[in-house]
Image 1 (tube, rainbow, N blue to C red):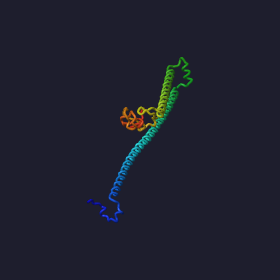
Image 2: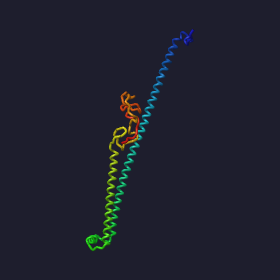
Image 3: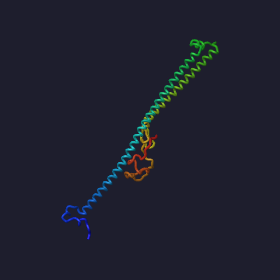
Image 4: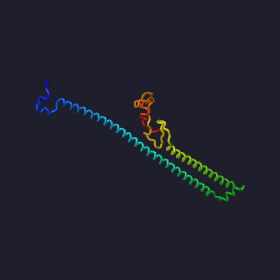
Length: 231
C-alpha cells in the first residue's frame, strides 16, 4: 500500500492543507519562475557588459579626440612661434645690413661730393678709386644678401601658410575612402575593414560581398578596426 503525507492528517483537517500534487505543482512553478529570473539576470548581465564595453570604447574615443585637439593646438602654436622667430630674425638681419651700410659710408674718408668728383675726375688717384670700388662692391654684396634673406622669408611664410591651409582642408583617406580634415585627425578617426571582400552571404544581413575579417558587409558594419586617417 502506498504511503502519503495525507494519511497522517486527520480527516476533518485535510481540507485546510494543500495536497501533495498541489505542492509539487507549486514547487514546479517556483522552479520554472526561478529559471526564468536566472535567464533574465544572465541576459541583463551580458547587456550590462556590452554597455560597459561600448562606454569604455566611447570614452577612449573621446580621450583621443581631446588629445588630438590639444596636439593640433600645440602644432599651431609652434607654427606661430616659428613665424614670429623668423620675422624677428629677418628684422635683426635688416638692421644689421643697414648698420653695416652706414658703417661702410662712415669708414670712407671721402664725403659725397668727393665721391662724385672722384668718379668724374679722370686723374683721380688709384687709391681713391679702389676705395670707392671696394665700398660699392661691399654694398652690392649686402644688397644681394638682403634680397636672398627676403626671398627666403617669403618662401618660409608661404610654406607655413600652405601647411596651415593643408591642415584645415578636407582630403580623402586612403584607407576608408572618407574625407577628413587633417587638423582633426586622431587614432580612432578612421573605421575600416582590414580583410578582403568575399562574395558569399553576410552573417549580419545575408547580402553578398562580406569582409573575411568579421564576416560582415559594408551595410552591417562600416568597419571592424579603427586607426588614424592616411592620405
